[in-house]
Image 1: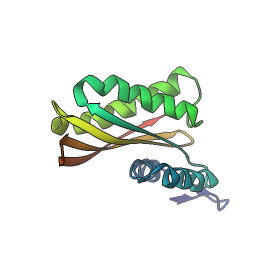
Image 2: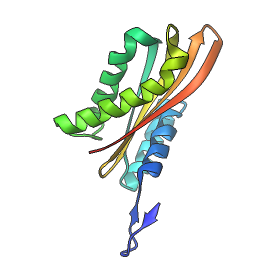
Image 3: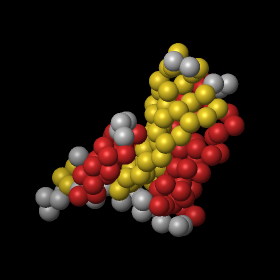
Length: 144
């Protein structure tokens, strides 16, 4: 967190990445909404979306969910640049998870956070079969 001369707080990419991760790690909708309200009070806009399915066939669906939930929650506007920033950050996060997830099922949550021009997307997934899961977090950041 960076303080400006006026005493107001400015948040950087590390702070926004942390917010996205915390949103992705919430246990249920109640915790998610509580955390979103807390972040909104300090000017950080957040969104989340759950996802589950086979990894390879689901990549585009996961990116779509990230963009749609970001627009629905007011994190981004309906502009090409902002949608592209969320899609790009989501793709980056997915590429970090890909080595563990190829050919397996995934399930978990996508967390998106934005403060001014910083946009971060965190993906927390359980990866595997039945109860033999590995867990992974992917993180992407873009500037709008």
